[in-house]
Amino acid sequence: MATSRLNRPGKRMGSRPGGLDSRSRVVRRPRRRSNDAAHIQGDGAVARRTSTQETRLASGLGWFGIGLGLAEMLAPRRLAHAIGVSSQHHWLIRAMGLREIANGIGIVAFPSSPTGVWGRVAGDIIDLACLGAAFTSARSNRARLLTAATAVAGATALDVLCAQQLTRGVTTRDGAIPTLVTLTINKSREELYNAWRNFANLPRWMKHLRSVDVREDRRSHWEATGPAGSTLQWDAEITEDRPNEMIAWRSVEGSDIDHRGVVRFEAAPGNRGTMVSVEMHYRPPGGTLGSAVAAWFGEDLPYSIKMDLRRFKQVMETGEVITTEGQPAGRADSISWKYDVASRS
Image (cartoon, rainbow, N blue to C red; front, top):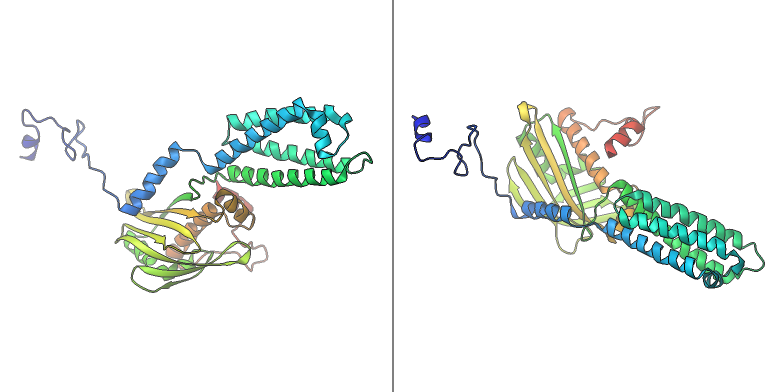
């Protein structure tokens, strides 16, 4: 009998991979993933061990603030002369220096928290207000004041973009933004795989895609709407295809968009449909700052992928994307603002 063979003397239960442990549960070896899938998984492991471009930018802003604060504390009169204001305001410059140092230390200590960077934004607004007030003084050098105000305005824009990225939870590494979204859909793996495998179907649920022209079995041409209504085009190739399990693809060299992705289909527990996981690595022009600028135009990649997957669920379960557009109380994106907030969390 099978039981007697498993309990032979000298055989330790659970001593071999794939054997039984002391509780008689099968211990399976992990399935080897494809090159592209393993590459993305590897990126995730590295990502957990390394800092992001957003936190490095925040740290740089923190150290800059500390250095500026020290200059304001140690040489307020010289700094007043450099920016074109009266040296009699040296006490105000020292106060600003103390604020910069305190805020900078907070950012360096907690670079992943947006609170400190938003504090810098508030300080920048105060600085711009003070410079604006200085323009009304006859003792001020307006040419130097304009130069200083321009520099502070540039720093403010950088602070806002960094704070925005940290608030959104964006994690850019090596110029790429990794995104992972998972959703359970009440359809079989075969149906979901077949729908996704025909890339010409993707514009039905991917809002920013205009068209996907399948030119070969593994190659296709994509056209999408970019920031501020611009048009982006690129060619993509399927790098691995396991029927009913996963599809991996990436853009080819020289494309407007540099990205790669994997979609996986796994049976949900209790025969409750299929868990669909979409993992993408997107490299926006300009890295984290390019991503932040794009977000101002509504191009938030993690949020877009999450909503695309929700639309995929609607198409597969109901045959269409549910919308309230055109109704008296309808909204373009979803049913209510509460839904939008919950979707972003």
